[in-house]
Amino acid sequence: MIIDVHTHTPQFREHVPADKLVMNTTWRPDRAVAANYSWNDYMAAMGPVDRSIVFGIAWEPGERVGGTNGVGDAGDVADGVNNSTAAFVRAFPERLIGFMAVHPHDRKAMDEMERSRVDLGLRGVKLGANYQIFDPLESRALAIYQYAEKHGLPVLFHIGTSAVRMAPMVSAHPLVVDEIAMRYPDLKIIMAHMGHPWTVDSVVVARKHPNVFTDISGLFYRPYTFYEAMIKATEWNILDKVLFGSDFPIATPAETIAGLRNINAILEGTSLPRVPIDRIEQIIHRDSLSLLGLS
Ligand SMILES: [Zn+2]
Image (cartoon, rainbow, N blue to C red; front, side, top):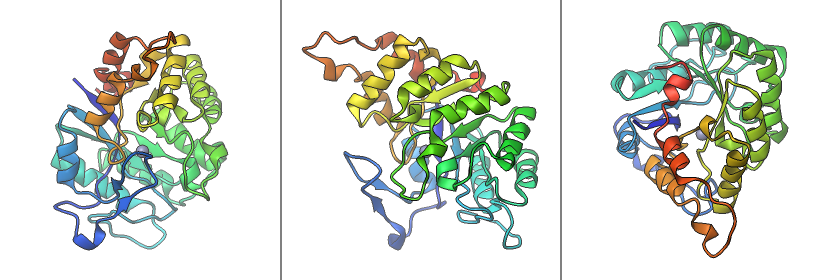
């Protein structure tokens, strides 16, 4: 069983119209990435994966992009993005688990959480305080964590750097998660990307909090950074809290699995410590849904 805990909702059902084919060259150092993709593109990439967690992002309060059947007044919560994720999950219920996207500054954020959980069946929350530009410790954000903790919804935070100029990095530092986890000890939290480049900070936060996990998405294509993160996870003994994720479309699960299995390749000819390969296989096959209370 392979679970991918970190993937992004496709914007198109059938195929991407020619005028919407955009290749992004800044997300990865080694290849361009198709910024728009379809349900079919997504399912093809998920070939090696049994189940995947999928979500959109509520970029702004009232954000409505990506909606397949969103209706409502301007200023409503991110119903477009959540309806879009829910429609995709309904089409592949055996394969997909949907997380909701909300913006804490949305005046109807709490209603949208209730609607997404009860009516749409979404089972966790995706937040990126840097991209969404909110203070992750302000009261409107805390209300989201409190609701999620009460209803057993795991929260996946974008943690780590980004190239978006106006996304404040301080909001996505792993030490923010330490503060949240102390206040909401029963909240299941996934820190995305091992908090790159602050990977040792993520490692010590995960070590400290039983319900804080981290995912390895979006790391393998920076081989030294990835190795360094994983050797720190080994030395601090938190490899059993590292979850498999691809960050599709930025990387595919197949590439990510190959990158994991290849992690020690850069060490050839050195006596630097190796990441134990049996532990790598455990990460690839980890039952993350059980760990997150979603099985
Ligand atoms: Zn992502």
